[in-house]
Image 1 (cartoon, rainbow, N blue to C red):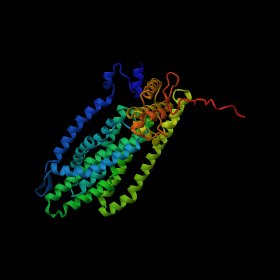
Image 2 (image 1 turned 90 degrees about the horizontal axis):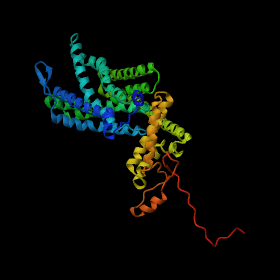
Image 3 (image 1 turned 180 degrees about the vertical axis):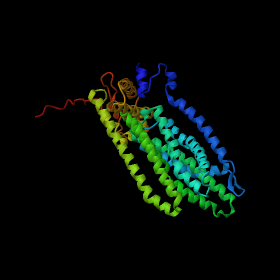
Image 4 (image 1 turned 120 degrees about the vertical axis):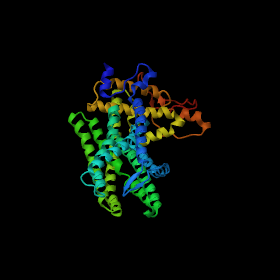
Length: 455
């Protein structure tokens, strides 16, 4: 009965046998399925792009070759790395596991791109029946078809994560990060295709001019000036899914993802429409004047949500301290990002890095379980999860997991024993509670016999 209640609310179920724990995690199966699906879809996409392209009047352009794809990948990779690092720094209170991030990036960069390519190609052939005027067909697809198709394919990554484990959406930041990563993966593969086509076309056509300069101009436009487009658009869908997961209303759970998806598609439609009718120079200036403020506003909103996460963690851990389940110092130690970062950085000298990192994750997860219970999105099954997490915190606190590194400093190896005695921050607590880091045991100095009573 308890296992059924936990599955219904999306909470992790503890296996009876530790060796069978991976069967209870949907991420293992999802990872294998994603790898196979990504390999198949990416292989089909590369095969299609390698076929010759009909330019009309009996002329054909060669398909993309491995050299062009390799060179294009070197141009597109820095943009992807920058986005991954930025989203990794934003989501710090309860960072997603590596496999979750890989699911978002892999889905956007392999599955979503392949599906969008074939769906857009199919729609292009259907829209060419009425009017086959040169250039009109491509504009129609880019404005009226591609935004809805691509945002649906990218946003499905966020929905997939929500279906597998909806408790990963601890705040709006979680939805924005997963959506942004899916969009960054999509943009990475799309940029490779655009750059490779420019390289191949420039080497095939004699009247192109300076091919390297044209490719660099395209890299500047897509890799720098407009690199925000796909991540920001898909963040709208991620925010909609995050709103839906955190709400108790059935109406909001249906309307919020649809609203986020439509908002992403409309922004994408506006972006493609302007790109189709404006000159490159004017378009670049417009992106800097209109697109950059939009990115700044979204960034400010995400940062504000991250600050709010710290307040939520502090409030929920204060609840446990009031009930006597956790020490009072936990609320301050685990709700400040700089303090948490310094604790992990100093833990090699005064504790264990791995256990300190695990302790921060478990305590933060406990705070979000309490927040979900207070919102009413998790029923009484959350009480069993609370007890498991508190027991886990107790075990980690006894295995050199550093709680608070404030005031601690690195030391030389030959002062290791002395520094451990001075910086020991754990004191015994009543049974069932974790050790409290930050409280030194009370010690008294010996009495000098020459001292006398005050005169």
